[in-house]
Length: 232
Image (tube, rainbow, N blue to C red; front, side, top):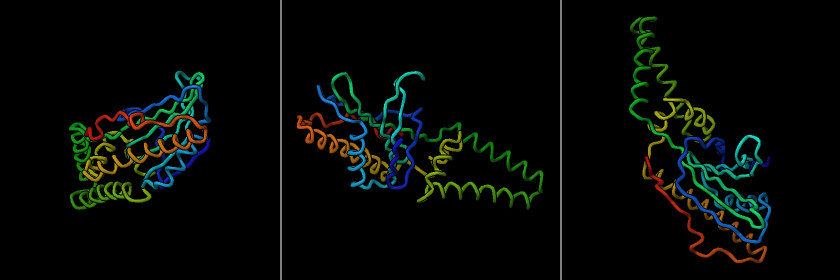
């Protein structure tokens, strides 16, 4: 399976638990085109935009059950946002669809209560085992280790560690709430990722329609359906 990587991020493979926040689809009647060639056009226009922290991966996903045929998709990810692009024949036509999935997960009250209970039980066990001074020192080392791992995960080059931590129950949501809070800057960059990725798809469509000499998209046809990007 072909694979491309943009700006060092790894495209996430799972979309369970995500929320669809934008969607766009367009059929091209009595027309056919290679999905692989279209994805190459999209990747080319993505690379020119140099979106920081964005990764892209081609992936075959089944249409339904485990025995159903597979469709080839292009997944484009930045942080917790996943842009899923599908280009495929449909009858004697060809269609392009894309959706932006949001799988951000902030901590709730249960996560914090469970985390506090875990730290208290850990502290009690360490103090009982080693005594007051050695126990406090050991507990401090454990907390410092976790804090250092979290700091490393959000730093440049820590994407692999970020992927591991965010999927850990309880710890993942607390980590994301503390180290990846929903700030104005994060909202702005999420919106820029959505718009720039969608523009790359539109530019690829423009190139495809120009190559084949068919009608391009109108301004109204270019607009995606956008839901709340700031649901947290």
